[in-house]
Length: 134
Image (cartoon, one colour):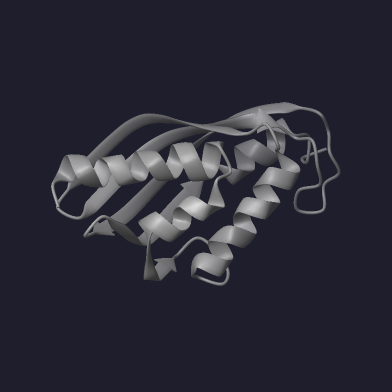
């Protein structure tokens, strides 16, 4: 599988799954043994649970790919995650405040399927921007 195709799989994940909330796309792009270091449980179920949380708390959220780099079967992505805090998040009631934070992700893609994901969101900045630090 060429690197540009690996990037295309990740772009599809960000665009269709995260931004357009098309969870059924996961059937096409996730490996059955998918492992997610950033979700609990650490599998597709954990990812789908995270998507529900994000969509309820930030229904207008958007992920913007700022940079995408690949080497072999690894794709690294630098993103901006933004939206409005319109629902409860981590016990914090909706504030109506807008936020914009950085997120970094590393994916392994084998034979056109995402086999693993590691992600880091600037959670302190997100909490500060939605008013959780008061």
